[in-house]
Image (tube, rainbow, N blue to C red; front, side, top):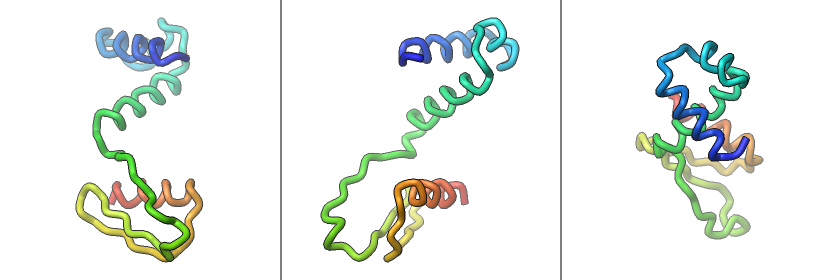
Length: 94
């Protein structure tokens, strides 16, 4: 689904006053597709994700992550990308 199609889907749902299931049946898309694009839009609008710049990953033995709520995570562990993403999601929910 293109970005324009996703925008039309979301805007149509918001205007419809239908339940997710009813709207998706009429639009011919799975509810999971609507939910996926709703989550993506919410993440973009929340501003909870910000770009980061890695200065020198070879020189640094660890990292410090400062979350939007002021919490800090400092670690010398070597996380794979998916593991670090999971850690951030868990920390921001706490």
